[in-house]
Image 1 (spheres, rainbow, N blue to C red):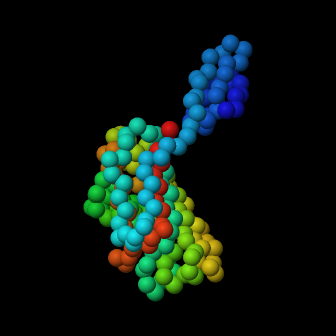
Image 2 (cartoon, rainbow, N blue to C red; image 1 turned 90 degrees about the vertical axis):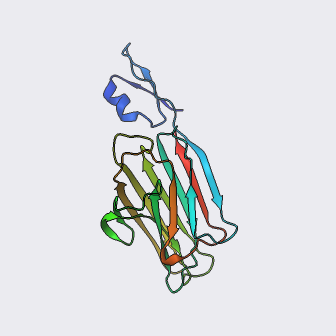
Length: 197
């Protein structure tokens, strides 16, 4: 772990959670920041097609969540299939986001969490997605999320982002994922949830 010297609390606030240990300079006390890291919560590697993915009973002991999603969909006649997400099984119009495909959406019944390569894409190519869910255990504010996607289909390599919020102050205890066009994520697709310390 790197160590630096700092002279006041603004620096310690700036570096909080950055995995940097602060030590006093010239006798001025500075907050010590513990290292950061990730802890595996659940890993789902599909051995058969699945129409939905669920992460339930999410521990409330982390600061943030990070969800990695990679794989393909069996959706026919298109190169990509949207991954839709919900929190705590809430399918009401409580999601506002700007997604990869959907553009700006207010009052959505789910949010665009990512994309999977679909049936018309070249065989063996898969999409990769990363979704951060911030301050998920808090009961003070609406929950915010930010995602990145990399789409590769054998011809095109593209990327995009999604961002938005779930208009609820409830702590997130579950995440549900479904796939556009009533499709499935195929065997070999992987969905991995981490807690950020």
